[in-house]
Amino acid sequence: MPTTPADPDRWLRRARTVTLLSLAGGLWSSLLLPAVGLFRATGGSWPAVGGAVGIVLFAATQGAAVHAAVTPWLDDRTRRRRRLAFVGATVLSVPLVAPLAAGSWPSWAWLGASVVGTAPLLGPVRALLPVTAGALLVAATVAGLTGGSVVRYLVVTGGVGLGIAAVNGLQLWFWDLLLQARQGQEARARLAATEERLRFAREVHDVLGHALTVIALKAELAARLAPVDAERAGREADEVRRLAATALDEVRDAVHGYRRVDLADQVAAVGQVLRSCGVRATVRLPDVDLPAGTAAQFAAVLREASTNVLRHSRAGWCRIEISVEDEMARMTVANDGASTPGPDGRSHGLAGLTERLAAVGGALAVRRDGDVFTLDATVPAAA
Image 1 (cartoon, rainbow, N blue to C red):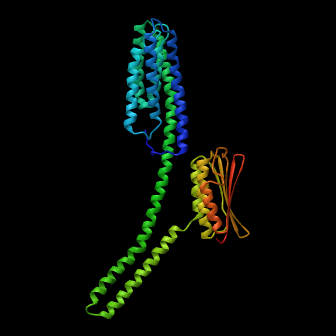
Image 2 (image 1 turned 180 degrees about the vertical axis):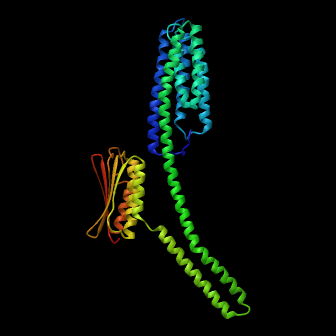
Image 3 (image 1 turned 90 degrees about the vertical axis):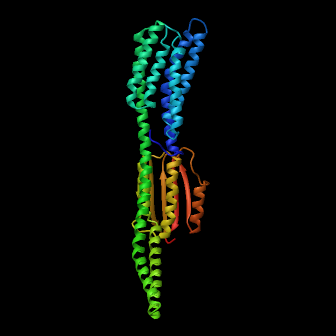
């Protein structure tokens, strides 16, 4: 099972909850049928008590094991303990549940079907065959010892169990695909950050490498000339100072270029992230380049707006539009799926943006029309 960070995001938690409820509903519904044997138990109260204990232990350990199967941020030790507890409860269920309603209702056969159905969640697919074979063997033995129908026991354990296993295996496969997709997004983001760091490192190396080599040679020459030709040594030392100042200016230019906001690239990157999350993103940019100050303000707005789209909505579409009119630049970010509680004008992120834009003569406004949330930011084009 793939692993994820210890604190998964809200979107992954919601998908996990849906998967867990779906799996639990399918498995636990098969536990209601063994409970029918409690009402058909004969021969005193002890068979019913033993059967009830066996069913409860089986259901509790099975629920814990299934929970671990779709909770990949659990440690391996906890996951292994839950599996072993489920195996132990399954073994105990044979003497406890098998005598329940013996001969009149296949109580343990339904538990056997649940065991087969759980197999794809707790191990590799290849384990399904030996688990099914073992469950069928136990079911046939129980039927023979309790006077039940062997055919009926085998049909319930094998037929129903394999059907449950197919459904559960399909759901677990989709869950694994979801985890892999999210891990792919995170890996792509880390790779992009690493590539940018390498690019900047190469640029700094190119800028400083030659300059530092020349400075080192000039300094060595000045040191050698100092005892014999002080005047020339002074000129070389002055050249070293000039080279160092030039290298410093070049590094500052490189850092300035690195920090300079490329708004078009950031908008394109945000659009790609939205599309990778299933949101239809539409981007419209002005024909003219925005000043660096305006681009920096809009970059901050874009980061907050895209975060709100992903965290506070179930957006199916998102529109990002930047325009320039009458010496004012405007950014509009609109999305649907905002029916759930989300950010409003008093949220910390939006409040901080409001103050930031106001400091440069801009403004921020948000509105909600049904499930459509719109954020409008205006900044002087020459900010």
